[in-house]
Image (cartoon, one colour):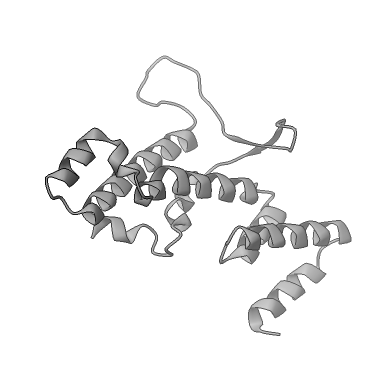
Length: 167
C-alpha cells in the first residue's frame, strides 16, 4: 500500500459506515470520470459538505463542450470567418488555440459572474442568482456550487491548466 492509499484508508476509518460507503462511491465516480485527485475531491465533499461531484461534472462539461470542442474535426469549419481564414492559408492549430482561448475566457467570465451571485454593476437592483446541486430528480439539494472559477483551469484534460492556450 502506498502513502496515498494509506492516508485514504486512515481517513476512511474515521468515518461512520454510511459516510465510508458514500466516500467509496464518490471515489469510484470521480475515478471513472478521470479525476486525477479523486481522493481530494471526495474528502472535500464529505468533510466540508461541498457538492464537489456536481462541481466537477459541471466544470468538466463546460471544458469539454465549450473549450475543447474547438479542436474537434470540422468545428472551425462551421464558422464562416474561420473557414475563410483556413482557405486563405491560416494555420489550423493556431486558429484552434485562438478559439479555445476565447472560449476559455468566455467560460471563465461566465462562471465568475455565476460565483458572484449578482451583478454589482447594476445599482438599485436587488436580485441575484445561485447555482445549486440537484438530486437525480432535478430537485435542488440546497448545496450551492460555489467557487467554480477556482477550479475551471484545473479541468483542462491535458493537465496543463490551460497553459497551452496562451503560448
